[in-house]
Length: 500
Image (cartoon, rainbow, N blue to C red; front, side, top):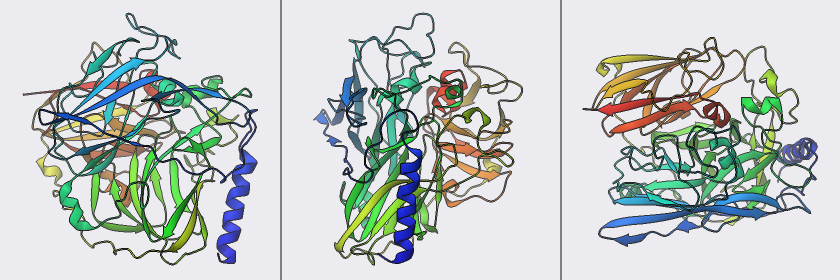
């Protein structure tokens, strides 16, 4: 490892050791625990349909030395859930079994809502509303009950997606406790691209989250007034392991970066400032690999990158989050004044220990063909104002599950324009059931991460982002919301209905 890279790596490690543990919990030794690769959930196939079974239940895991943290997880794991792998053109169905304890929602409850209710949102899939297991939109399944979504057949590009609960007023707490998992949609046609694709070897799923712990090891959730602006944590987990290491060959490695945090954005980069290739956004491959040195991924969003370690046998390299400014004139949201690790602070995430050289194929110059981005096809333009005059509102309104905010005609092409009126906090804007294209940002040119299929996009303070929406695969009732989970729990959501 050269001296510059060694120094950067040492500085990165020292930075995390200096900022972790400020919450009263002891800090484990960093980069001493191996990355855990989530198991792949094997479906039961019958009648031409792949059936995926998820069971949500209480569990526990030792995150902090000398303590045990109560958690939630799927399918008997200690934390998070297995990876679901879907295939384009193959019919599938997801069933959820709720074995959670009757813990009360963190923010109170709606009339008729029972403690311990949960649901499953298939984040990023373009399917009918009945395939998402969110009964009555925002309500959930009572403990001890089960439900199956409708059978769906994925018809969209290969992508890194995910699943997580979505009960209104309790989504943030349930995700924080561990209910989330990666979902990968494979397209058999992509095999010709010869991309790194050996799961857990040169194709790594990385669920990145920040967490805060109490001295006894329990999650420290919503205990400070500033937490209502989005829960922030000082311990950085990858697949449920704090500051892990991963041994990889000196070859091209594909990283599927999923921001599973409740609020935090990550400006992903490497400690030696190397260039890497971004190959995909939320909903699929880019037209061609984009050489970048950093990629911004807001909460709920994903990015696929390929890093070439071929020339690095014996070296150590860190995946990091670089420093960024949340808003000009602000050092991050003023509500997080008590945070040790603020939004936009730099820190290391995980370590790569690079072994012997293994030959790999260069990336193809062409990855995918995306439809022309033609706003002239839009027949409707809708405006969405975030926090204009009142906190946690969209167009001046809080979520009402009995109110449909937008009526959309099936097959329509529309422009959705979203303006963030908050001066000091960005909002990750997410729309259920659709992959859209970003047209432009009022703040400047689009980065590569804006130029592919998207379902979640960061709207910076004072910024307007326009997106092109084609409702050609949707039917029924869907949500749109801020993906700061505490914001959506407090009502920063709306409903749209797609009908003929």
